[in-house]
Length: 195
Image (cartoon, rainbow, N blue to C red):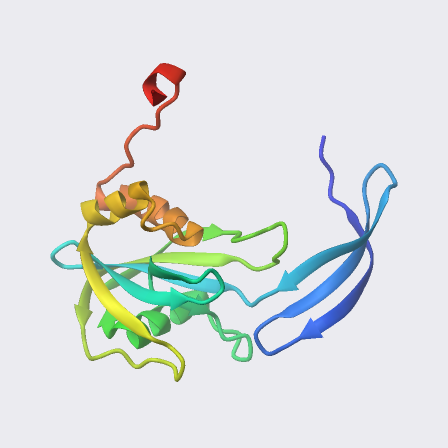
């Protein structure tokens, strides 16, 4: 049976207001000691799958410099650790800031671990139903976003084709689809089906 490792020591290597980078010395259950296990500490993240009254999903298109790609994503971002912000409030704040939309109803549909091998934070995924546009987006100084409304089948097609390949977006859509009356097609399971 797999057991948790024991942390022997922890050393902060770098810290900003956005994240902390540390190195832990860990003892495995069999006594081996890993001298440096690197961990990035982030505040929890939030995103929201916004669905309009006419069953369109609101996405944001933006450039992601780390991988050099323009992506389609659900509105989202970080909770504010200084305010100990509730994830639902953070998701609603991000939706309004990035798109100008507000929902009639919000539900938590899943909590993900975006990268548990290297990060300690969680992603709280919400669905917003009955979204209506209240005003134009109010972006942060260095955000460059275009708001896009797509039919649910078009969003599914973009995931299956690989056009939407952001893993957190894909996982969030998986949480949302049953609530919207959709399911992903059955995966190919045998060699003859794949050919």
